[in-house]
Length: 382
Ligand code: UDX
Image 1 (cartoon, rainbow, N blue to C red):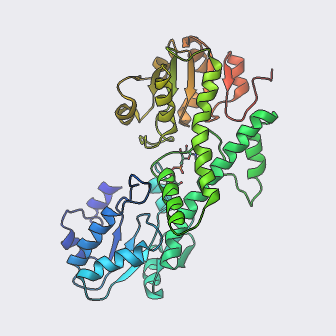
Image 2: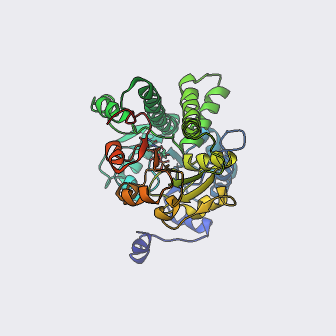
Image 3: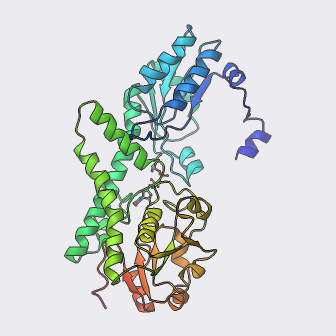
């Protein structure tokens, strides 16, 4: 897409910020806003770019902040920094992005909504026009509401996952199957079917960072955001819970070979930031197990985190060879279509721990696996 648009002279790339600022009407700030050590948002890049914009503006512009920033950052920080250097007029907007990793182009072009936070309705109209080819509701809000919509969306989605994970844990006790429960509740339009996949917890570069930041922001403003705290706590517990399950399956996991299918935080990405798979790997290594990892894309990144002691394999079959258990830790769809009969024969012990409820438990049982999922009770069924 980038190559095509460069060729067709719609996209120009350069490292001369002054030139880009002077030649354009609308400037998007899309820099990263990582977590600082104390969980607050590191706004260093935002500050730097705002300063550069302030120094290089020569005419009024619309400056749009796409980066995820705490409420009030656009009005109180970005505007102030730019105004320090540029005494003329400029407009400001907050336009959060909701795309998912691995689906970035599709999500950007097919969003459920475009959120435009502005100070003036004129700026809102210009940005609505900019997005005119994208067919979806465009909502105009205040700057602070737009900033809040981004945090609230991520918090809600993560809460939905933590909720179903807790339901899964109760299902294990009550003899219910969380996959059936999720389908049953998700068909209620008020609940909806998405983000109800139980598993070993959520990770990635957004949910963990944004939820921590949101908790911090609320706390600093004197509000105890109880539900958000629980959402984070449930997620931490979910990652630990699977280790408890593994421990209970062996007298000792020391020197046991464990095959880990999936290292990325989710499918279709090589990103391992806050990946539940790697947390499991680290804990297993601490317990003295030998981790044999396979991932279609994330091996290089995983090496940097669990490198020294882990064995990385070029195929899932190599990973499971001689292993005492196999764990599905990432929801890569292709794992579903592996030759599971072959996997069973390659394993030292036919134990399948499905951390993403990817497989059909009865089929797995038929092949001869001992199947342990999340929130499923197929051990008891024939
Ligand atoms: C997320 C938001 O979805 C996106 O709108 C925002 O812009 C950035 O953060 P992303 O981090 O790419 O996107 O991943 P997402 O697909 O949301 O998954 C996040 C985590 O939740 C993954 O670890 C995934 O495995 C897990 N997940 C997701 C579940 O455990 N169950 C589900 O039902 C959905």
